[in-house]
Length: 403
Image 1: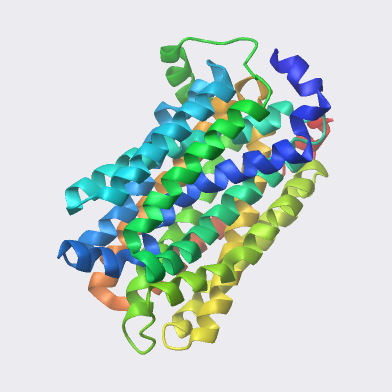
Image 2 (image 1 turned 90 degrees about the vertical axis):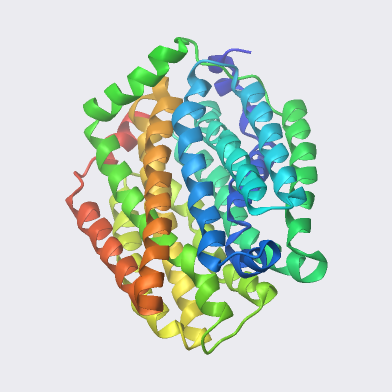
């Protein structure tokens, strides 16, 4: 089936197909976050310090960014369904390796493999936009990204609870098995989808740089989202260290449950996509930037008061998702023929920001503890807000072009 015929087929964007794509995205992306509430247990298991265990957070995000740069653009060249399934099976192999690791280097290798190939999620997101009916690409991206975001949030909670019941390695073993089942389900359920004007792989990679240079909107939105995710990643890389020690002293399961507080942020994803379709993406971005700024004082106080920490988690996730969904949906509308490459450029920058935030967050924690981490997170949130309010007002034009 050609991409045009797929886009015209209602079953390509039926509720069951969107839910399946959302589930697959959640599993792929969420797998990169299993380690965050488990850092203390991983460090104890391998007999290393917590900083060494925390390096797996940065590695997972760096590997994901590399996969976005090198693998996700293949969605503009290859048949997208087959590509997504193959990548998901390879990511499952990485999760299985983590679940069987007997040393930290092997665990890190599994983390690298899982992170690199989990970009199956970012093949499915532009695929959803390509299959959407005219004027509904923001909605489609919002639905699929809701699954991805819920996967990220629930991954931390599920990982903590499974670790308490069966040990931290069971988290990875169970995820590997489920990912294999869902990958095969994707193959059976999704229509074929291919770019009508495929280009060679070297052309794909070189054109990504050209897109970044020529598309002002792509540069602006990538930078803002990268800074926002860097700010949130400071929290992700240090929250388990703060919550497991200090005045709160939570265990893996309790730390994982804290992640559920951020689920409210994922619920705004579909609404943010709809705002883009209506030309109101600027409003969504402003809400996201302000929420990001407000969250860090709450988290600062939350280092010793659990209620403030939970509230800060809700607000910071809401802020990140408003910014990310709005920017990603807008980027998907800029050049429909290059959706895969545009999305790859955007998400590469997004996760490079996350990796930088994780690395800097660990450094800030080692130098200044929780106060140092919160100061860094707030500074990055301020930079993201400044970039947000300087972006040109192109949302309305994008919406009209989509129609």
